[in-house]
Amino acid sequence: MRLLTHNMLSSNIKGVTNGFPLRIEVEKVVEKQVEINHDFLRNIFSKIDWKAFSDASRIMGYTELPEEAPEPSVLESDLEFLRKFHHALLELHLEEGVLVCPETGRKFPVNKGIPNMLLHEDDV
Image 1: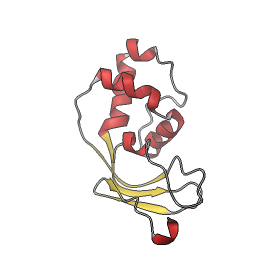
Image 2: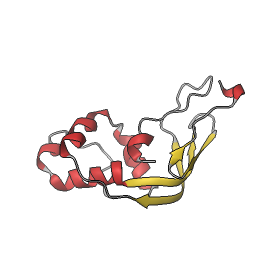
Image 3: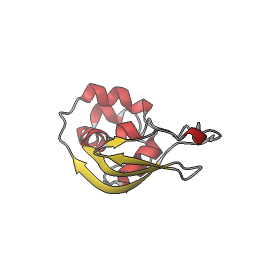
Image 4: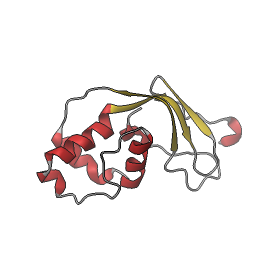
């Protein structure tokens, strides 16, 4: 599971009002090379919750991103930042682990890079 995916997921358990961001418990992280697309990175930047993204990248062992979101203008001038953003967003994969609801503590397993967000009947 890429951090791009993680940044879009939330817990939909009945009664949960704050199901984002899901906490990551890492068992295995893999890196998969992906060709960089500068236009995609510039377009997706404003849609990313930076704090959740930055925290998740640190949990996955990648500490090269700033804790505070940079100004969007950096996307036009700083190719090194774009490379780091690309690496964390698209090349780091949570292969095995767990996503945890911040409100209820419910654990959603991630196996072979696929998060299982299915709810039990009593969670719906």
